[in-house]
Image (cartoon, rainbow, N blue to C red; front, side, top):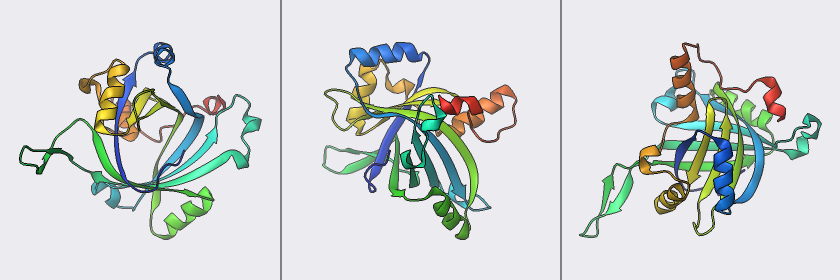
Length: 222
């Protein structure tokens, strides 16, 4: 679901080998669900020459609808669309003893992010095409968002994707480290790659030709 339209995004991913064990742990930690399980259809746009990708930038149009087993419950008034811009990766900063900020390499994905809700995904896509952008990659997932007691400002997002189950932790560096520790992970487990990269890696391992990262049609009504 949409968040503040301005600011810096700090996040990491964690690969989840067993979702049942994770759900049991989240229950013990008294995680609170703040956004119910939501189906997402994401489309990335770029120029015909891939200029945005080469410059580390991203334009994404996302359509969201609450997940339900009965597909008839998916009515248009329950759908939302979000347009997102993400800039190139930024270095994290650490204060030195002299009080000056120094750049350090850290296992976090830090990007400028601008995000806004749009009334019509179809109209927005037409505007992007009129500006010379084209759809280049689609990916789907189900997302459920939680918070953890005592970890302020941290979003714990459970993502069910065609290439596996992941958690995305988004917040401050301290909050992400604290949340990951509570969930049984260390910085060695942090992933900073995109879902597109995970999908293309999976295709290479399987010897499959990559296309779009999509669920089978029956999965979308789960």
